[in-house]
Length: 111
Image 1 (spheres, rainbow, N blue to C red):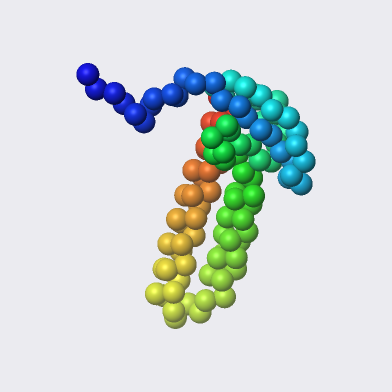
Image 2 (cartoon, one colour):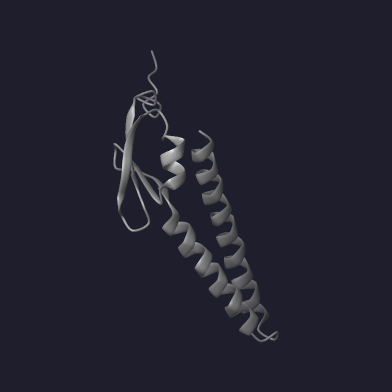
């Protein structure tokens, strides 16, 4: 008999805690997924395992970093093609990370 430990307990009811951007407690819910209305209002959401379910600060910080990289790219002389390629790769990686985080937030909201 094989036991899949990674999926063990996925059907357990969890407690979700919701906080505003300022850290003000908004409420709590219990269930398999976060309560949609509270989730939409919250800036931070944690589950009963203290796992971060939603943190909009991370997404905001990544967007600011992306803007900074784009400004840096504009300032690089065209003769420094190696630097341009390096920054372009960093921008592409960061854009992918942002898209993945946005999808995760969207999927959490849809659940």
